[in-house]
Length: 106
DNA sequence: ACCGAGGTATCGG
DNA sequence: CCGATACCTCGGT
Image (cartoon, rainbow, N blue to C red):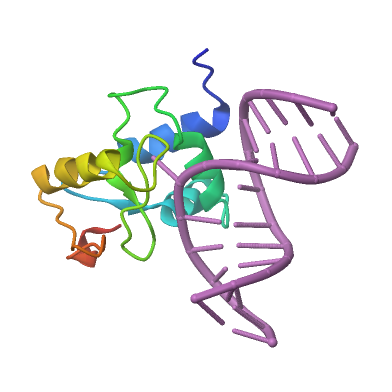
């Protein structure tokens, strides 16, 4: 069932404050929620897309510019799709899976 | 590079 | 309740 937790609502709110063509790190997001160190909690909350496509989880990447995962996969066609979506917004990644322009991260 | 800890939610025992 | 799992990150060795 699509049960949305309070934590997820917070994540949703913070993510809604991220404009298109911009990305945020799991840690930065968690920090915004008031849960420093809760990067994993954010990842856990976004593991599935309960509010898809209303919730642009592809806009959330690693703090080191890593693309992270997508739809429960940390590699594979799903990740390739995430790269595509971000590239369509002007956010391009390296072959190494690294953000080309870290200045795009909030 | 490898290991462990840390915050949140779900699942099995 | 306890341990394991999961789109992570940091610090020590």
